[in-house]
Amino acid sequence: MKERFTSDPVLQPINPNKDLVIVCDGNSFGYGWCLMQYGDDDQLHVVAYGAQATTRAQSKYLSSELELMALALALRQYQFFAVHKVITVYSDNTRVLHLDRWQPVNARQKRILTYLCSLIYPSNSFVAVIIILQMRYPD
Image (tube, rainbow, N blue to C red; front, side, top):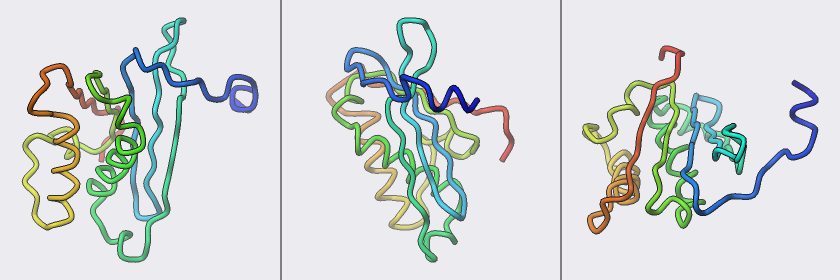
């Protein structure tokens, strides 16, 4: 594994013609994401990654909210490449699976969901699709 992380290429350049795969996770210490694309060898290659430590107030958020924040952060930074692409999101949180049926209970959730839904389900485009898959790990 050490050889895999230290050998070339560590990051692949993003291909604007290919679909995106986002893996996101969040807990009370921080939240992060990894943006990947399938290469010519049909293997997933890391294109970008990011993380952010939670503040004292954010550490009290629900884990599903932190995962939504990680997803929003990933899409905000690569919004230009995400338009009109199939975005596959891997998450270990079952609540994130039902993004389209999530009822916000506070202003923070409403802001995040409004931003995500404006990117994922644009009104003038039928090409953008999101597929949210649950990983093998339970909540």
